[in-house]
Image 1 (cartoon, rainbow, N blue to C red):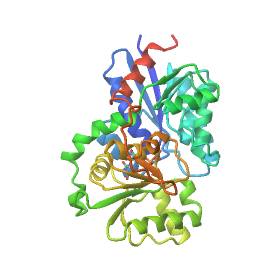
Image 2 (image 1 turned 180 degrees about the vertical axis):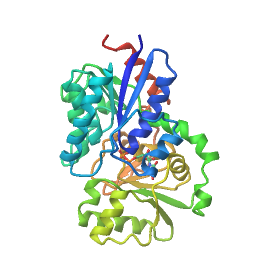
Image 3 (image 1 turned 90 degrees about the vertical axis):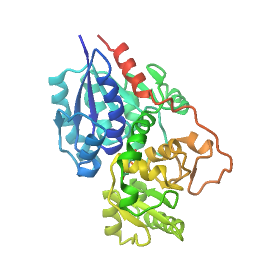
Image 4 (image 1 turned 135 degrees about the vertical axis):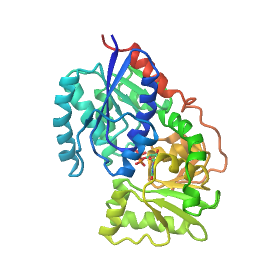
Amino acid sequence: MSVKILTVVGARPQFIKAAAVSRAIRETDGLAEVMIHTGQHFDANMSDLFFEELSIPKPKHHLDINGGGHGDMTGRMLMAIEPILLAEKPDWVVVYGDTNSTLAGSLAAAKLHIPVAHVEAGLRSFNRRMPEELNRIVTDHLSTLHFCPTATAIANLAAEGVTEGVHHVGDVMYDATMFALEKAETGSGILAELQLEPGQYALATVHRAENTDDPERLRDVVKFLLEQARGRTVVLPLHPRTRHAAARLGVSLDGLRIIEPVGYLDMAKLLHHATEVYTDSGGLQKEAYFHRVPCVTLRDETEWTETVASGWNRLWKGPVKSVRRDINEYGTGRAAHDVVRLLGSCAPR
Ligand code: UDP
């Protein structure tokens, strides 16, 4: 009998992570996957494009839930996910990262006594004002299997008393980068389209509530980016939340090269040929390292502390390190296969 995995995704970084695991599931005998897309991210270039480019099968269940406050969105997701879990009766519910979709998926499953597996478990910023931090903590404490990308993540879980079912598998985003790298070099025409020369521009992304929701903070971030843009192009694929916040708060983005959010292959190409990355994204901090591009993180702390310790990343107000070293913890591009092997071998029945 095959092990039935029910995957809950909803936001862009989750499509990227789930793509790697979903591919490994399809390559493994005895496992079957059903996917729920909560609808948290819904724009074509934040959702559909990723399913196409990363060859993710169309989700069986699309909830179309987005907008509203955190409680509203999470509550509607819980209500919609519960009957699906009752009907599908999966062996595992697999959730990714730290969004409201992660929280709703794990809580709905745990309440029905369906075991939860958390991919990217154990990350902590130790800043409970971040909605992501709360989602991660609750999800980790509801999960049976914890797939950790780093040794720090394992130590964070241990400090909270979570030691069972904890596995250091590496980072499934590294698998995704490996998948995209070659395809992007030949398949993406983004540099020509934007008339950019390799090595002649920097790349930025900004989307976290802590940067977009506070006018003073958003102005500070934009000021920093504009300083970097003196004499050089800074390309900013603009997240819808940031676009709305800048318009609402009257923050001008003139001086930055604003483009629409791009697909994963265009992003890989842009990243690969950038001189530097400025970002508040968790995923991009690591991807910058995967592409060996130095990164400045537009936050006061990071969950990916090894990127800073290795000298490849620094906090925007933190010290500059001159020596860089490699990071070994992210694995060899086979993290998704380890996740799938463990889901198969630890299945509860
Ligand atoms: N990304 C992308 N297109 C963009 C901006 C980001 O494909 O226009 C990718 C990026 O390469 C990374 C992921 O989206 O893999 C990061 O997502 P996001 O910054 O939304 O979330 P976080 O990583 O902070 O959870």
